[in-house]
Every structure is written in structure tokens, then in C-alpha cells.
Length: 269
Image (tube, rainbow, N blue to C red):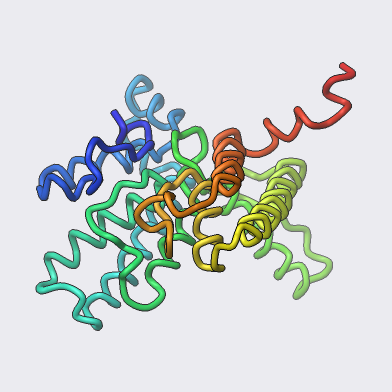
């Protein structure tokens, strides 16, 4: 239930690592990926008789591409660093934690904050993108990231060819300019909120790594962070916990839904 819901809740402190079972980890990986896909895609595949919809959906393909890229980079670093006794152990741990982090499920089998080099930060960056739209996952969402990449690419082409008439596309669908504006508006608010919460957490006395990862983990509904919040949030002050609670609510409601309650125009209607 916790896997499908993307909650990451476990009845054991060691999370999924308590069971020490490759089969359980494999089942969790499958359902974490399924829970990260859009429920509109699930509906079309199951009830619409289109099982190949998963492979035709541009957002889900982009999401899987990011997951596979992070897995490949992480596995290479593990092999070079000799982090594990054999390549099979490295592969299993890498796939599980990358899928768990990018889907913002938050399950762990070990403390990935101790992984070599930049890998803990790479996984955290993956969580910023998060799952697909209309899924149970958190993060900015893959479709927003995909739209921003397309928009950025279009602007580069317009710089090279100023008179060219270009449109942003995801697959065969043309992205309306108003949708692109909303995406960039969401991203701008997201960055502003993140920086504000980061400053607030730094003000509670946390170091930068801990504060950054704590805000990122809570705003993206991930759970585990780095530094002092790698295992739990017991070391965070009471005021800091209130800040992170607010971050979790913001992230779960995708910011705008909650912020609109603080606008005078909403209450005048």
C-alpha cells in the first residue's frame, strides 16, 4: 500500500532493507515505477485496450530515460569506486535507490547519503524532477521539466534563426503558449519558495547540506535527505519541523493550491 501510494512509510526503521530480500525489492521497484506513471496512461492502457500506451506516452518515456540515465551514471561511479563486493550488489542497490528517489517514494535499503562522490546529490536532483503528472509522486513533475527543456531549445533556435516560426512540441502535441507560461510561472514560484524555506532552515542552525536536502526532500515529498536528516529528522528543531511540515503541504498540493488561500482576491469571491 505504501509503495503504490508513494508514501515510503515502513513498519521498520531499516525500511525495505529490513527484509534483505531481492524479490521484495524487485516488486517494490515495479510498483514504484507504476505509481509514478500518469493515471490517465494507466486508464488508457487498462480500460482503453491500449497496453502500449506506456511506450507511446512522451512524458513517461522521458521519465524512464531520466531514471535509466541516473542508474547508468550511478552504477559506473560505484564500479569505479569499488563501493560493493560485486557488480550484482551494486546494480541492485543502484536501481532500487534511483527508482525510489526519482519517484519520490522514499524507500531505502541502506544509507545512500554515504554513496561516493556526487551520487547522493544526483539522486536528490532526480527527486526535484519527480514523477509524471497525474500520478501519486511528488516533485516538479516530468511534464513540466520536459516543457521547459523544449521551450529552452526553441529559444536557442530562435536566437540562431530570429525570423523562424517555431512551436514547442511534446511528441506530436503542440504546447500552447499559455501552458508554457503557467509552467514557467510554477517553476519561478517553486524556486522562490525553495530559497525562502532554505533560508529559514539555515536560520535554525542547520548546515547547508542538511538544510538544502531537508527542504528538497520535504517540498518534493521524498522523505530521506542528506547530512543530519539522512536517517531521520530528530535533530531538527521544533521550529524547523514546522517549516518542513509547511514545505510538505506545499509540495503535496503543488504550491498554487495552498498559496491561493493567502490571496485577498480568493476571499472576496
